[in-house]
Image (cartoon, rainbow, N blue to C red):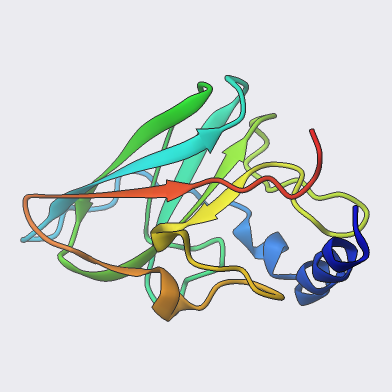
Length: 158
């Protein structure tokens, strides 16, 4: 790891935001709103077929936290995995995702606080010195289906 990578890693870890990406509160089976869309998220750069790829569709208030109102998961496979989140009310949201290789519903981190599992955000929102901004990850969901792609990033060598 270069000095610059180490400095950026320390800044990411210092923010503590990565811990908030735990998905322990996955909420399935929410009541369907009167108007709803399916959000099909293609998650690219999945490193292997271990575990699951989890996605959460978040409001500004829940972004970077564990309580996003719409979630889904699919078995991991190398390359790309499409995860569909059903019954999302039309509106603006940000998507956060991670590759839960050991299926513990938590984003595992190393001693520096960097994620040991791949993590990504809608619009491939930049992570400069900390978490992405909601505005950078925001996308519009419309009926009947909205499609988007995000790329997982792995911060530690595998």
